[in-house]
Length: 129
Image 1 (spheres, helix red, strand yellow):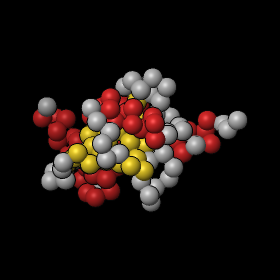
Image 2 (cartoon, one colour):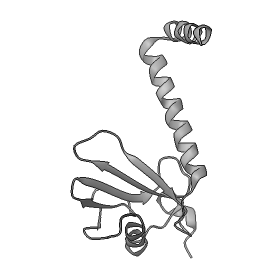
Image 3 (spheres, one colour):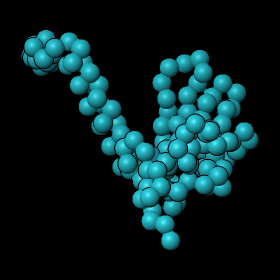
């Protein structure tokens, strides 16, 4: 028997389960296919100009299935985390992802502008507010 965490992201995401996720989230699994140049368990599909990816969370290690969607003609990505057993939303994993993203944005801001400038900006905003 293979251990659960021997799979990428700790989740064995099969084509059958990816189809179930696609049906649940988008009402169709038409066009769902395995991503050829990715790790096992990565699937993609296209719905008009919407690009969808369904894969284990190999980035944050939450043990969830990640469903991401983005429009071809827009910026930003919509992300959802699902419990791999129940396929229900995992809001704790989503919150951890949001906090990490905020921390990364803050780090980028400080590295781009310098610590002295950022400290002065924070003081100025704090005193005004």
